[in-house]
Length: 72
Image 1 (cartoon, rainbow, N blue to C red):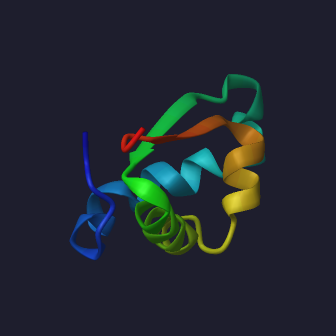
Image 2 (cartoon, rainbow, N blue to C red):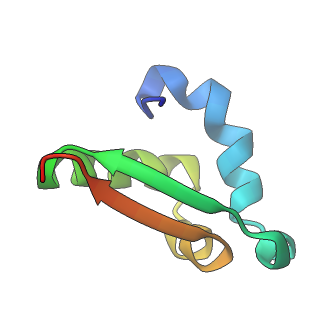
């Protein structure tokens, strides 16, 4: 697994930019994002908002994204 903290943005920014591209919709990926409780989910959403340049909707539309709470 990986974190999505600010220090990780340089590693993941191009990946998330491409994952938001409508041209990738036909080959969308299954992306499982694990978090711990609602606070962790909200933190990940904030980081994804930055990484997708405010295009979380396109990211979720073009890929099969599942958020999984590991606290359960």
